[in-house]
Image (cartoon, rainbow, N blue to C red; front, side, top):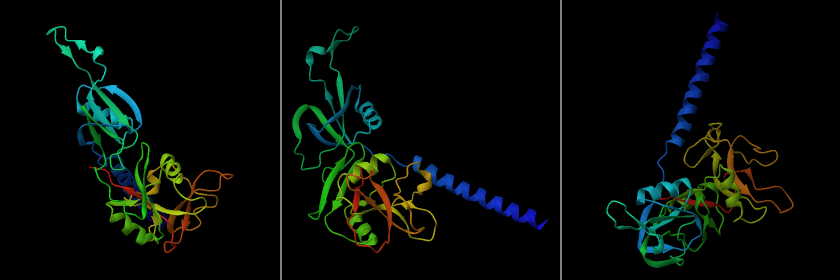
Length: 265
């Protein structure tokens, strides 16, 4: 009888854990999406265009940009006026609207934006990002805006430094993110990113408190994780070795770090 009770308690605990885990993962999928905001009217960006489509209105353009993972878009009248069509009922000319999904937003004082009364420029990021002189601001296409530190801090100090810029230590739990961010860091020198296990929870989490088990991607280096607790550094190995990987570091280690700028919600 006692063995049956123990088994029931064990199964109940497992079921409870699974429900909690499912709830945590469900919240990730239901998280609010960034919003494309009108940043500059009567202008368009010359950032690289991912894809172009016609759109009946700006909301249709927003949907198209979201599907393409664009970080910004240009929306306006088509520039080739010879392709205007005629409305059969009214006989009037119809000017088609064009949507240009952009892989990156304007980040360097709008140096690639041009005045154009036929277009408006939208972005998921604010018009000004205060990175500071000790950071390098960069765009990882279709992924986000990041700042790379030129100084070194421990994990807690790095978190605070990121928060002062309305940012967080970078979320890296995807192949696109791990590979994209690794291109900007020094070879063989780890940089702190937003993945840690510091609270005896036996669960690795990012800076949004999202558990690693909710994601399919892993980039642990050989023999990693070496400990059940610690903070994760992203490593770009020497070119003769395999691709970038995650490495567990003591959280009080002094390292460079990567912040992720928060988009507009």
